[in-house]
Amino acid sequence: MVQVPQYCPALNIHTTALYAILRRIQLGMDDEKLLPDVLDAPVPLISQPLNTRKEMMSSSSGSIATTRSIPAQSQIYKVYKRRWYMLSVLAVLNLSNAIGWITFAPVADLTASYYNTTFANVNWLSLEYMVASIPVGFFSAWILDSFGLRIGLMMGAWLNVVGLAVRYISTIHQLKGQIRFIVLLIGQGIAAMAQPFLLFAPTKLAALWFPESQRAIANTLGSASNPLGILAAFLLSKIIVKEESDLPTMLWIYIIPGGVAAVMMTLGFCRSIPPTPPSASAAESSESFVQGLKKIIRNRAYLLLVLVFGSGLGLFNTISSLVEQVLCSKGYDDSFASLVGALMIGGGIIGAIIAGAYVDKTKKFEPTAKLCFTSAVLGLIAFCSLACYRGLDVYVAVTAGVFGTFGFGAYPVIMELGVETTFPVSEATTTGFLFMAGQVQGILGILLSQFLGRDLSTAQLGYSKCLASVTPQDLTIPLLVFAGYAAFNACIFLLFFRTDYRRLKAEERHAADSILNFSSHSHGTPVTSQGDTTS
Image 1 (tube, rainbow, N blue to C red):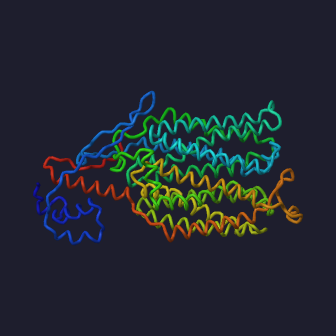
Image 2 (image 1 turned 135 degrees about the vertical axis):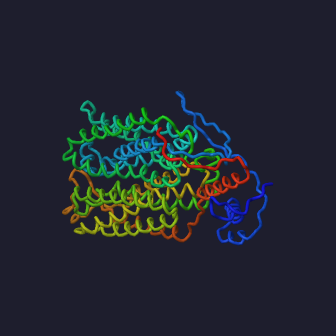
Image 3 (image 1 turned 180 degrees about the vertical axis):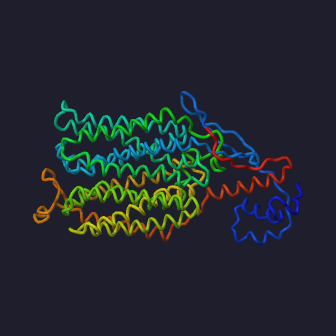
């Protein structure tokens, strides 16, 4: 038993009051219950258990998970400058993979003509990414959780570049007929298998390498490179491909960022976790993959988040894949379709950076997510309604920009909110199921658009800007269905979603434990946080 001194000159506060408040934080009591305890007499300090830290030991044969015990009162947190290089590697990987995913959407008519196929078959080039993410998603989440970031990202990097190279092989003249399109599908499928490894990683990298004050912005930068890749594809595909014969040039150019990213990953990404963790939550062991699955399926708030986020991501993927087909059938040319796609993605990148910086500072994950998601839904409803009519160029472009700005603004915030909702479940597991829900709903959205789409009337064919070599469809009914579904999910999110910030509360309790342990050990060492190290 230790007698707490009545006054601490260093802190300029009565330690009786400080002790009572910290004990309440440690026990997870509500803020409104703190004040009465300030008046209570000191109680005996209880020695705290040791914290455990999961480490990944890198070797030539892979990474091995080990656990060691560290006294809470002696834990020192550090951040390393190399974390920014690792984040840049992940960003380039996601950018390259996103370019591969959306390569053909801005030039869907020319692609269909070059490979002598239909719009429906061209849509499968985007659908492959969504379909592959479901079975591969489970495997990639397990790899990232069990073997660490380095192994998971290495697999994603090389799957991506090999897939991009196989796509280019489909353009060689020795391949004839439908064989060319089959080879294209195979290459696209290989690159698609890389996507879960890359998109599940930002939250895990942010949690393991970045301090609490930088986690959301790190997640934002790692995730925003995906829409940046989509934006690049929308712009570059139209610039490079002026006619069918330009498709091979486009495909070999898109191999370059994938190859650069794979080399950066292989040579420079040497560790899965830092030698010393950057925060208390990073120092603790995550749940195993199986235990994490058991926990998240019983977490009602997380399951609601899966439904809502999945609908938003699925609708964004659907609209991005179909935007050229939606607009050309209403008389808008391919250049305008590319502009609309660029506004959606460009606005999304800006929105994601602003939202990420804001929640890093305020920790208001839930209200920020709700505001962004609701605003995105309003933009989507307006876009789906206006895109059904001709001659509304400015309004269609503005509403698409609103949808993208707030839609992708919500993306990193909801990813972080998912981690807060499920902590201590591994970040890759939490992120993975959110992402897979979006891919499933994206698949359903594209298939639904093909089922509900109608052939153009004679009058519509007169002003359609789609190539004569393909058969365009009127997608008015699917667009209105998408708008209604988005509105339903926004209402569900606003009315029923509530959650605790479990990771932040765990870090608060850990800080309280550390100060209490320091008080109870005359020779203890308080928890400290060091700045960037040189390595």
